[in-house]
Structures are given as C-alpha cells and as structure tokens.
Amino acid sequence: MNPRLPSIGRGAIAVTCDLLEGVETNAEIEGLLLEYGLSDHIESGGSIAKTVLNLKRFAVAHPDHIVQTDFGSKPLPVALIDAAINVAGQRGDLPLWQKLERYLNLDGFALQKRVTAGMFKDDVVITGITIAMPGFVALPEAVSEVDQLLDRYGLYVSQTHLSSAKENITQEDWEAANSQCRTFLEALTDGIADLLFPDEAASLPAGLSKRQLLAKHGFLSREKHEFGDGNGQTFLPGLAKLLHPDGAHPGISTQHDAMFRLQLVVVTARWLLKRLEAGRPTVN
Image 1 (cartoon, one colour):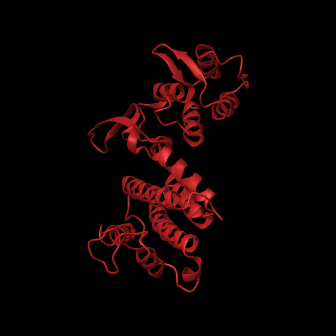
Image 2 (cartoon, rainbow, N blue to C red):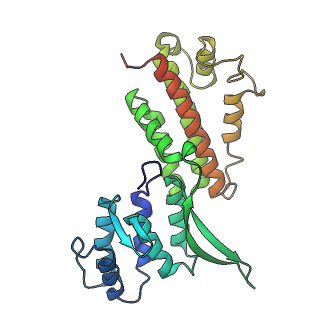
Image 3 (cartoon, rainbow, N blue to C red):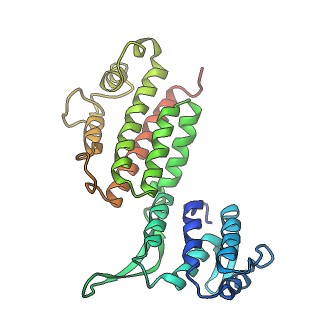
C-alpha cells in the first residue's frame, strides 16, 4: 500500500476471506482468482472452504501483493474486501462484518455503511472502507513505534498489557480492554521510574508514588500540568480517571469508547517513551 497509509493486518484479511465463503459455488472463487491473477499462486481446493483457505493463507503471507481490478491496481487485502462487499455487503448486520470492523479499526480503517430504518431493525449495507483518521494520528504506526520502544527498554509488563488491550478489542470484550489500557499506562510510568531512578524507585510502591518520583526529578512537569498529586486538573491523573471503567458490569462500554481509550493511551505512551528516549537513548 501507499507507505503513508496504514496496512490491513492478518486478522482483517482472515475475516474477509471468511466472508467470501458466502459465495454459492467454488467456481465463483476460482473466477476471482483468475480475475486477480492469483491462479498461478493459489490452487483450487475443490470446494469453497478449501479454496478460500488457500486464498487466506496466500493473502496473509503476502499482504502487499498488488492485483489488477476493474478499478485499477489495489493491494490484495483491499481487493478482497471489495469482493466480500459484493458477496455479503447487503447483509451488513452479519457478525463477521462486526468482527472485521474491530480488526480494521485497529489497523486504522473503518467500514463505510448505509443504514436505513426498517420496520423491526435497521437495514445495514456495507459500501466500502475508509481511513479512520488522518495519517498524522494513525494508530497502527504509533502502536508499532510504541512496541519497539517498549521492547528496547525492556518494559515487557507494559507491553503485555498493551497487547492484551488490543486482543480484548478484537474479542469484543470492551471492559477488559479498558482495564488493560489503564493498567498499561500505570505499568509504563512505573517502568520509566524504575529505569531512570532505580535506587529511589526500589523502595516505593507502584502507582502514584512512582509518578511523584518522576515529577520530583522533572520527567513530568507540574508547571505544565502534566502531573499533580490529587484529582485536580492535570493531565495524567485526569487521564487515569477517564480510563477507569465505570464499574464491573458488562455493557458499560462500546467499541468506539474502547478504541478511543486505546488511542489515548497509545498517543500518551509514545509521548512518554519519546521523552525517555531523548534523555536516555540507550539502556545500560
């Protein structure tokens, strides 16, 4: 894809292929392979399920493969989504479309829909995909850099919580995702304090005390309202309060709310890690 645009990941590709299983005959899938010039790369399995599985394997392994369509050159994952829309776009309320949208959101995309009111429920038609946000705030690139920095500095506890938050979103477990986002941010500030001021941090409990340590040494600025001891109008305490789930009961959150919180913590983590990188470019 255009290097300035996000890429569609393996999860979204796999679910897209699952949607293609809605065709009526294996010949339709074989025709798609011929149209996209894939017949030399992908064998027919003799049945819809087996041929789609072969397609899925190839597409996941070659996400940057370019195919020619009647609308010009497109990356294979985008062309497959177009094909899935042709097959099942009129049934936009299928659970597989909801699952695909969760993966696409993590990749920086969103599904385009046409919704009309029906007698008993809304009629949802999938019409395409679009970039979810401008490139300069794209989530996938930020997550990638955050993962690299977490790995560089050995902040593996934080890395685990971030991975769990993303996995929870794909599983539609919004409350768990929200909880992991907050725990990720807390573990990150704890880890930064342990890295920068190991002797002092060793005797402190996790959480507020270690953020106070970061503020004491100027890593977090009180003057710029990055941190304060109470629940006042400062950035990190306010963010922590926002990230606190509203309770332990299911149904308190939504996909968009969970994505918003994930985006907030990823952008904040990148800001903190770039500050760490600027003051401590290598690990001792």
